[in-house]
Length: 501
Image (cartoon, rainbow, N blue to C red; front, side):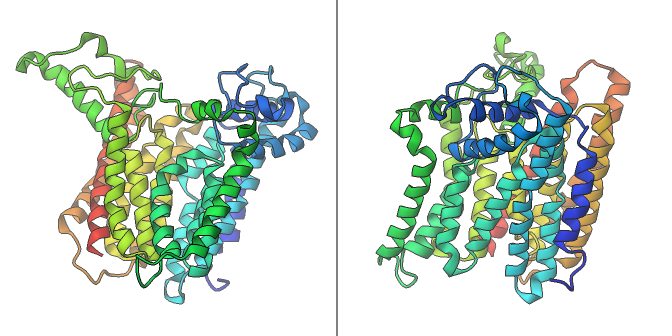
């Protein structure tokens, strides 16, 4: 890879310099969440971690992430012991801020290593495209703003995911791929959305004979099953001995929360919510019944408070069934065609289905779709056509996370620069498809990207000038609905490409 410039290492160094400059930037409540978890895991016995509730930001990640916080807390003690006191709510000394910011950069080395694995595993004819895709992920505006401003550890965990996906590229790495993914599930349970694709792929490519689906490779099943049981045992075993699994599950899966997050994630339910707003206005003219108590529900941003004034309410069961249905469709092809490209496509489509139809989806979960899709976006121009609107909508949908004036130029300038640079680079590197492209989808992609410019201008600048602090939810609704159209359009387009390939 030395002949391809710039290298991932060079990009990582430059990106780290920018991220250090962002240390004083806005930080969300997630910063206090992780400080509190450092305090919980360092100050309390293991058995109390999932019961501690001094802060509202209780520990709600699986045990491997709690162990990860416990390890970091021992270093934190040397920096500022004050951050490790559970009762020090909202504690944010400069030592604490710098320590936590540095840990995100350091743990992101996992992502750099995994992306280098991906680039090195590509064939000579596609190495340049793989390098471009890897750099686009490393410099992703999503990871920059979510991890290094908002504050989370997504870079590290997406690095583990990419490493698992790359290991699956060779038959000799299938077992390791499954075990690495199992460890990832024990760090953050959101990756369960991708588990159906892993299950089908490993079943077909590792546990069943390549010559016949009716011949089971029992030794492989034992190795994979035993490894997964050992990993989950290491994570949950100590808590199981104390009978704490129900308590952990109640923390990991809080279904009392509402359908929509405080800010609508750009999915089917954002469109559904927008349609309900429109029908409220039309109801008097067309004689529709309106539930007056629900008129303000989806615009107040309250957790557990989602109901619709005209359209039927959506239950967690409906979300689960729709997610399962639209995940199952691509898995049929994966079972009968267990290639690596099909596997990555199925992982991407599982991410799409969970994001579009899931219950209480966070806008940040769009990275579950963007990052695996990036690995195959340059396969040919049809894949790229489906990826473009996703890249635009997914990153634009993150803008409302940051509402302070100081971060305004960062999120706008950096995101627009990234989109222009990498969409141009991708356009040059993506090879022509051997199959016909879809004219209508190409036009949709072009028009959709063009509309993003006035939308960003209105929501970020003009709305405040025209309305001041009135109608504050309007820019959020426009951004979410616009982004939802892009994500849905991209999903439909990629579904067609996936089955037509």
